[in-house]
Image (tube, helix red, strand yellow):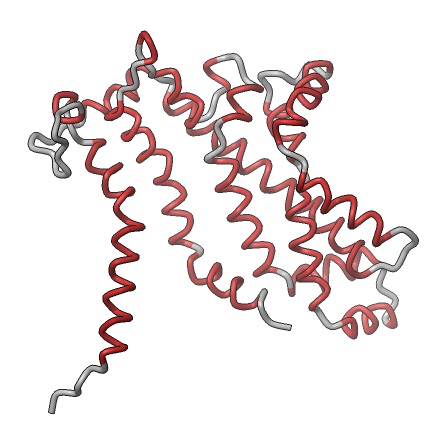
Length: 275
């Protein structure tokens, strides 16, 4: 006997499929455009599927850019920022969440208030400081200014507040120091939150264009996102096929990384909502 479907179930399924299609459409356009020849990319009216599939766009990226170096630079930049941010953000968040000291609330307000300052407002003084240190065109200049983040501190603090304080008290009774409690008690219970922050931090810095574009002037020190700007033709002509191929290559590592940690990522989202 075939079960009858309720109208609400059918409507919900159709709505979800429509939303999924709308979300996936830009990604499909990127993938398909990356394999179109120039004539089809500029044709009017445009077509969704390529008539003649080609790898010329991908070849141009490899031929005209130090592609392997740019990808390595992106990994070093995004990975370095993520590693340092996890260390410094977690230390600051632990102090703000688990240690009572004078001025803690004021310090937290000041940290959160920095989220309301536009990034562009601090760009010039940060660049001047990096330049004075001689860190332009270095990984230190790219990574150090982003080694800590107000959002990461606030995010981890909220998670640490949800952990039972009985764990801290039991460790203190056993004679553990604050750093030992942080390293052996709090961090192992905060792995879902750390993983969530690591994913967001890595993705944001991998996709960032303005920061590496300003803090690097040498072609070999750029990232994959800033390197694609070098492909702009004379007069500002944008080779959309090549750009889409570059975007496809740029997001591939992110998709692979997300698929590898998908289960833990979903777990972390569910866990951070528990009290």
